[in-house]
Image (tube, rainbow over all chains, first blue to last red; front, side, top):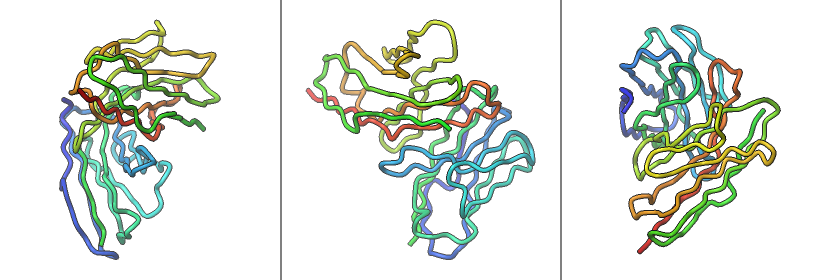
Length: 111
Length: 115
């Protein structure tokens, strides 16, 4: 398995609070991605990174921000969590920009 | 823009029977194609990929898929399924010339294998 960890693995938070999810890789891959998984929607891309400090928006970026200050870490921040952001969040990495390898996921519940 | 359609949300099948999970895609440019498997409460695992070359690709756990450009399809097949194949399967596509390889996923097909 690719060396990808996500933290926390589970989190319950209240509406309006800030939340940061962390993705850490040990593979030194250039590309990193954040997806959310919801029933009936499959996985949808939130943000991605193509290098340190280089990020761009995905399909469902509203309400989310990201940062990548080191190759190995990619942070996803919900500035003010809403119930619609209750989801399972997956981080993925890619070396050559072809296949991606996924982390174990973070289950976030916003009450 | 690209899109992926997985025609069946659920596929029930008996153990040792063959199975085909259907995937169709739409894109205005050349694409890479992937199948991922997700076991309960786990992340996604790459099952197989089509990047170039032979249109019949073989993956892990005895699965294979065939890229059909004229029908824009990438159906997943296994000649004899096992109980342990019960999982959700996702088809995904990315643009061939895109450096960041952003994946567009289908909505998934839940394969339920029973005795």
